[in-house]
Image (cartoon, rainbow, N blue to C red; front, side, top):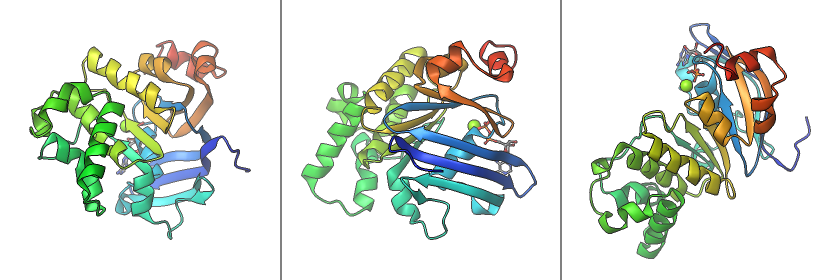
Amino acid sequence: METNLNDKIVIENFSLQYVDGTESLRNINLRIPRNAITVIFGPAGGGKSTLLRCLNRLNDPADVKTMNGRILIENENILDPKTDIIRLRRKVGMVFARPVVLPMSIRSNITYGLEVMGEKRRSKLNEAVERSLKQAALWEEVRARLDEPGVALSGGQQQRLCLARSLALEPEIILLDEPTSGLDPISTGKVEASLQELKKTYTIILVPHSVQQAARTADFAAFFLQGELVEFSEGKTLFTAPSDKRTEDYVTGRFG
Ligand SMILES: Nc1ncnc2c1ncn2[C@@H]1O[C@H](COP(=O)(O)OP(=O)(O)O)[C@@H](O)[C@H]1O
Ligand SMILES: [Mg+2]
């Protein structure tokens, strides 16, 4: 399969089986365009989180029996054992369903990763704090309290802090696995709005917490069912005129 310049990630004939025999992904072929929000959605157990974890090699190798196929990020197969995982995770950031705020100040939550990588310059660190908090639509709410503990923030703010923390490392791809599942509608709206901004610079893959969120946010959408990719197309096509009956049943609320 040729890589099109517009594809940031190309997944080819990819399958994954866990050690207990669960075949969580079966022969997935999917191209993720750059500078867009691609939504991966479908009922629980469909393999969405498994796929996201593969994209930055976060699966515990002890859990995985076999992985076949290729996952190319700009022509580099990240499943290759020679892949530099640290570099990969820098390029591919991840935000989880429950905010994982570090037990330190708001500021340090952002600078931690950069400091681990050796950045010591105050000016660079301050710059990263402001830039990433702005990008995550949190700056105005916390600029006057950067030295307070991150855990003192509300759930919605904590989730945006986690997004800011991953943005501080200047990734190219951001994976979000049901990032707003625990949030109120206002915080959810803020996260969605910041994703619309971020897609101008980043490639975004979002597992939404509902079909409604999928339809609101998707430039492109992939419907996963029991380990298979049923349908992939532009969001506006998939949610208004799905080509597969199973997609239609799911998006119209007939199951799931
Ligand atoms: N570490 C694991 N070991 C064994 N089976 C797993 C593991 N993680 C997920 N699974 C199974 O793989 C399937 C897909 O799970 P998951 O990727 O979490 O789906 P989704 O995110 O779409 O709900 C499910 O059947 C789940 O039980
Ligand atoms: Mg999941």
